[in-house]
Image 1 (cartoon, helix red, strand yellow):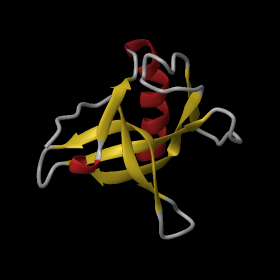
Image 2 (cartoon, one colour; image 1 turned 30 degrees about the horizontal axis):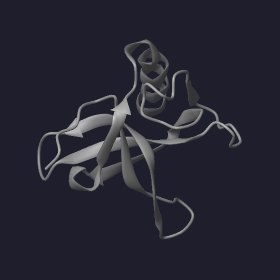
Image 3 (cartoon, rainbow, N blue to C red; image 1 turned 60 degrees about the horizontal axis):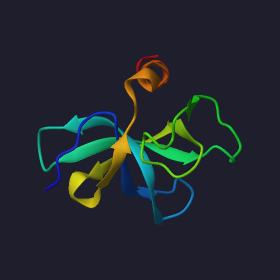
Image 4 (cartoon, rainbow, N blue to C red; image 1 turned 60 degrees about the vertical axis):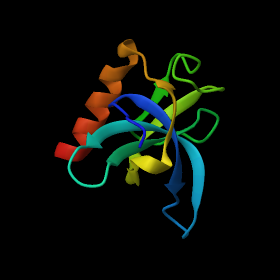
Length: 110
């Protein structure tokens, strides 16, 4: 099974919230669940051209994260994925992590 770390950018089958299908898309690994069968908490990454949502965090350097186009991390959409279904695209640079951490903490704790 592949090994992932927090801040990896991965491609995963991401579930839609409004219909029973998935789409392979990029996501950010927010947590690696060590217990159990190898699970990842991932946060959706979407095109920066899409309508903005509250909590979206722009990715300043998409190329460094392994992304082909300007993108945002949509912190409102987090899900659990089997790590065996993920493939690594890149890593979010250190300089871009604080806004994501802040937005996720606000959503998960408050």
